[in-house]
Length: 380
Image (cartoon, rainbow, N blue to C red):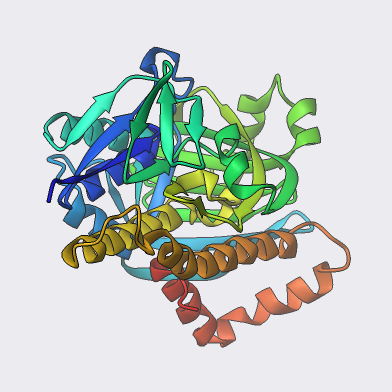
């Protein structure tokens, strides 16, 4: 039996990771990355955190030579702001709670590995038309048939519309994520999450002299302070981290924040994967963990299908993927949304929030559950 062939469309972290991981199976892969010269995120300086179990999956499946850009984090501190007071309400200490890296570094390593694989063909073409009825892609009026087509092209692509048909859980947070990196001459090896009145702010160490910041603020705050964001953020960081010796702050990048959870994942042999499947609030750092769990399950199902000699296109592969991954993706997405609401500066939640945060350390099971979910997700 000839090797079955799939195509993956998209050169983000999800698309590149899927290509490398799925190439471990006995299949051929066409990876469509578009025109890299038009890649608007080629200077992306965002940082991402993955849990211990996700990191171990990456180590097992992605044979990268350089792993030093993963910064192991052994402590996470959570803070809440109330009446201008910052309170440390919960701490997590454990060997390698999570690993933090810059997106561009992992992308660089993934591309190196892809270039060495004979089973992956890199195609620099933009796919703009798909035949959803017959399950094929159209390029320059030519038809290209695949056993499986994976769409991993961000959260807003119109290519998803004929699959989802508007069936999504959507919320516009009316917020913007501000991301940048600080260089410093201080001792900052711990990750921190601050729930501030302006919005949640995360400090993520990348190495001993650089940490990344992700600050989610309202659209109105972003507009009103657009010309002085560096100054505002630097002042905020100096207060929160007790005057670190900052030597430089990189350009601040901004991204709109929306909740978008697809309730329909596929049509025929065409699957959505990555941010297009579940765009969640960045405050919990679970976005890429969900992607990796999706890829892991997809890889397992492909392996199982091939072992019993079935065609990927004519099997129940995508139905099984949908039924196993949808519950967790929606549960995590909605759970993060509820957490965001809980920490909002809202007079109705404030009294209850104070009571809960003042007493949360008295309930160690909450901490254990949080650690388990953050590391391995939920089983429903």
